[in-house]
Amino acid sequence: MSQTQKLRRGLMLIVVAPSGAGKTSLCRRLMADHGDLELSVSVTTRGPRPGEQDGREYHFITDGAMDELVQGDALLEWAPVHDARYGTPREPVERALSQGKNVLFDIDWQGAQRISVKAPSDVVRVFILPPSMLELRRRLVARAQDEMDVIERRLTRAKGEIAHWAEYDYVILNDDFDRSYAELAHIYHAEASRRSRGLWIAPFVDELMAEAI
Image 1 (cartoon, helix red, strand yellow):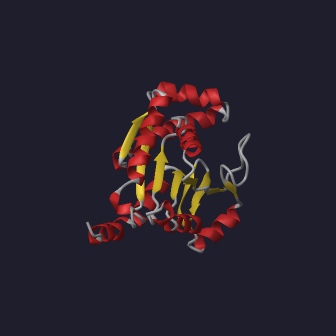
Image 2: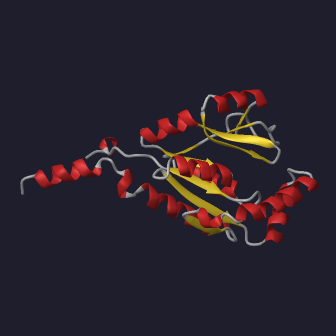
Image 3: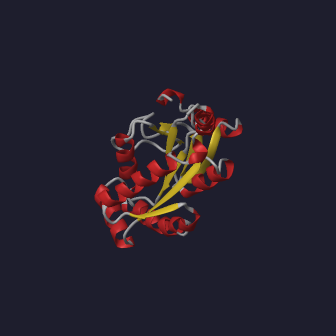
């Protein structure tokens, strides 16, 4: 059987962490190393940060456009986060899964909850923990993207986010980037190979058993 004949159902890999825990860096490396993995690009009403491009990190939209997407049920999930709203467009994700492609989600815990309820058999959830709150503060300050009052709000919010760790299939402590990345990549490989996602297996086995010896 050729690779093109191996029909499969894609998976949704949801990676969640408090700001500064290293989620974005881990996800970027996973994407770079795996050509079969697509990134779900969220929409957001916040403005772009330095270096961000519309359509790459996020689709940056107005509050009015977000209202239209919510009212039209065009989002798999949406939630307010840090004085802005974020959401996941439904159509590109559903199209990718039906084509056997895997989709990576870099979203918050609220979005993870909502998607997990809607598509439990398609979702794999990973939570990234920082090594300590002091290290989390250091990383947020070092990246120099936010004012100190924003950083303080992110740190306060982080404890509430971490409280949801038990809702996840896997938890990774990001105290060493290379080791944490290896754990994430192993999780991805194993989950992508689950029997339940291989739609080709049953008919292939039937053909195999019918072959003459």
